[in-house]
Length: 221
Image (cartoon, one colour):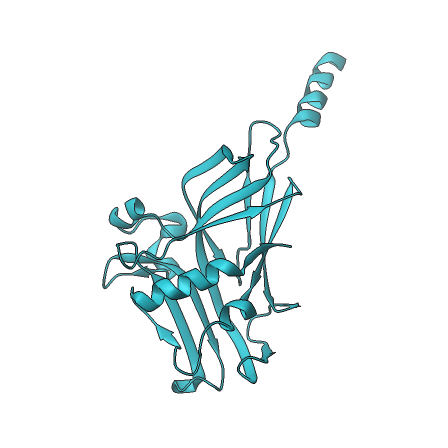
């Protein structure tokens, strides 16, 4: 019994810990809270965020420019109001110096039609009228928006050239167990003229432009 107990103890002692990816939304230096007003010096007005959701896919761990671990064919819906973490379960302890991932749903999954899990159309991230997934969704309010109730809506999707909005992100990391990825919404919105650009609901040239802007708001905390 002592020997068996030793085996179990050794198993749990050397069993690799899961790698946790945590997405931390901020507005500038402040943690982002749904429906809270934040002042933006860029527009000289307040902004509140009502919804922030995006698809995380094709996660790769990299060492010296070489992929050493990858998660294929898995899409995680990150939602500021519900889910902000993803766990990676590896077979052994890994040494890596950067993490790479995509924001969006790959073209193969797009043409396969609506699916289940995080890709279930009931999640509100699927355009049934044009058979495609929304890669990134940001909704909020600002008095500067000349829209009903001053809302802005950015539903960014598209997977066919020239409106492919999937974005590839690569970030250097040091902590190999808990990776905190900061999302700076203020940085993204500072690059958008909310007064004139506040409604994007289909693939377009503007969608591609916005996708490149939010690709830059990811950083390691």
